[in-house]
Amino acid sequence: MKNFLAEVAVLFSYPRHLIFLAARLTIAYGFAMPALVKINNFESTVKWFESLSIPFPLLASYLVSGIEVMGIVLLILGLFTRTISVLLSCVMLGAILFVHAPTDFLWQTTDLRSLCII
Image (cartoon, rainbow, N blue to C red; front, top):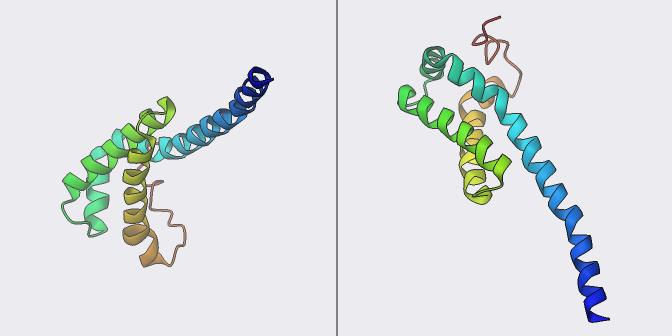
């Protein structure tokens, strides 16, 4: 009977892992487009950060782009998820403070759309 209950417990743990995988993939997908835009147009990203009065715009661009790319990779692989989540939260906090708070959280058409080359 103990073996049966142990097998049932293992069986019911699989959906939890699939839910965690789906959550990690969804978050990674959410960071994918902004990260690609920043990396593909890096000089424009530095100028944009400078226009937002972000201190050390070149260093900040490297840090934000690197954290986002590493975050995508690590979240997909499921490695160091807690650590990278804290770093991604810091990036999002910076986005709130420097981009969205000054505009009262209204969408600006000059945010990422101006960096995209169509």
